[in-house]
Length: 76
Image (cartoon, rainbow, N blue to C red; front, side, top):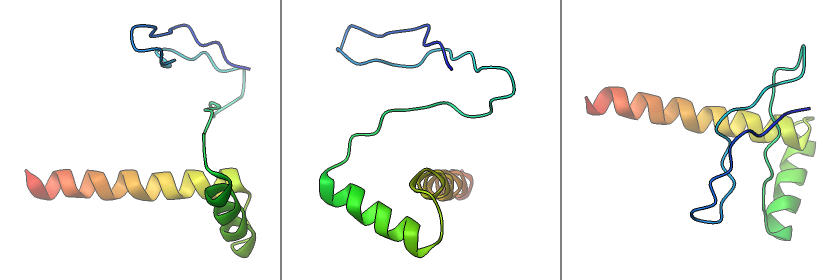
């Protein structure tokens, strides 16, 4: 359970400004809009890797963030 304490209505977009996680919870839930083909592709890839779709998305996101961090360091 999380409380979204900030909503940015200036551009009709809900932005998480502060989330208060439930005790012992280390993740937040974010809605993800995908096309049916994207969802099926992710589901197939997750199944092939013996992962849940959530675990796969977290891993892919972390790989992307790590690569961006490396790019920023080499650009400096």
